[in-house]
Amino acid sequence: MRNRDVTLLALIVIVAAVALWIDFAPKDAGGKPRWLGLDVSTRLGLDLQGGTQVLLQAVGQGITSDTMQTASTVIERRVNGLGVSEALVQLSGNNRIIVELPGVSNPEQVSETLRGTGKLEFIDSSGQYLQPGTVVRTSGNPNPTIQASRSPTSTATISQTAATGPIYKSITDGKDLDPSSVQPSFGNSRSVGQNQYAVNFNFNGQSASNLATFSSQNVNKPMCIVLDSKVFSCPVIQQPLVNGGGQITTSTQQDAENIYTQLKFGALPIPLTVESSRTVSATLGQDSVNASVIAGIVGLVVVALFMLLFYRLPGLLATMALLIYTAISFAFYKVIPITLTLAGIAGFILSIGLAVDANVLIFARLKEELRRGRSLRTAVETGFNEAWPAIRDSNASTLITSIILFLFGNNFGVSIIKGFALTLGLGILISLFTAITVTRTLLRLIVPLSFAQNPWMFELEEAPGLEGGRQSDVVA
Image (tube, rainbow, N blue to C red):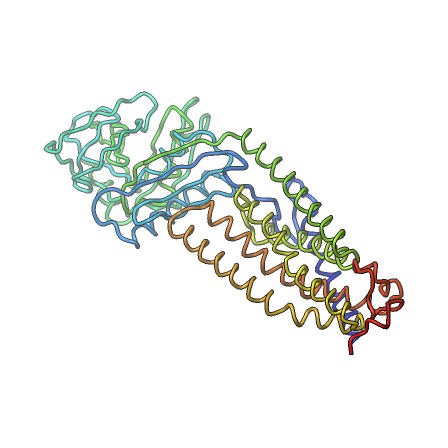
């Protein structure tokens, strides 16, 4: 028995040491804490870090769960292409996608990049020059969905064509675009003049053949480039495009980056409109972080004082277990990783109370057994055995509730509920380890120690089973 407890203590020390190593991992040259090569930075959600939240809604026909899942994947790739860390992309209902971008403060730029379908077409304009920004009908998209947004170029004005307008023949098909060939070219390069920006691309298959044939037959004539049913430009063909490649030039780096992201990371299977967008202040987020840290510290201190005042020595051991619980919890948050939101921190603070709930049940039974004249070793074992059914059932019911809340938040896109349920559920599982294994092991190890035989250590005036207790009170 003693050897087993010593082994468990060694395991607890190792787990606690690893958790602290993760929590206080050294930073690399880039300023990010790393543990065994893994980035273990603390991930803060939109409400804590500040940023942008965009709600996208699918429009048109053919909206299915598969197309929405595909659209969500494309949006996620585009978000990753923007270089935004800790971004959240999730489905909401049957036709909406929620995008949360911590640290991004320009919702207009983000919305333009995310909602564009990313369909690139070259069209035969029959020798006409079409004004950039004009919405056109093409053979590849005869019924475009017109959205109220700014033009792909910074100065163009969108003119909406009537549904009965001409249908221009598409020379290329967006599905033949080679994503690996999409590359940005900024000013002062060989192919781009000063203060100009461009995106290089290349078509494969039939589109490449059509582009080579058309450009060969129409030298010195305009050929319009259409992106998402809007005319981007109508350059004059200087020479045949025999390799199926080309270049889209623009005067602003922002437009070039938007086009690059849309083309590079795939075309959306359905059009998306921005139903709503909002910006969260970084100042508000920092205030929330500060308030949450204070709330967490106050919660730990109050719980620790309660345990020390009402249970004394067992309360001290429970406080040690609570500190280990906190270290392990934050280590899991960093390794999984879990993005902490204000609601998620609230779930963690609530789990602190649940973490000592099991100890309260155990220590209450322990004191009852000591009053009845049991020895300390017997009282410890009996206290855990008698309290376990109540601990198991109460934690199981709370865990089931957490799972239901998580599924609800995941299915309906309510990230606040999802974060709360995740931290609460994880806290319950970790608290079971600290309450049953850590506290029990520490109690078993102090049983032979002489100071543990003092009834005062258990907030008792007398305990017949302890040394110095009134033997007349022993219950047979």
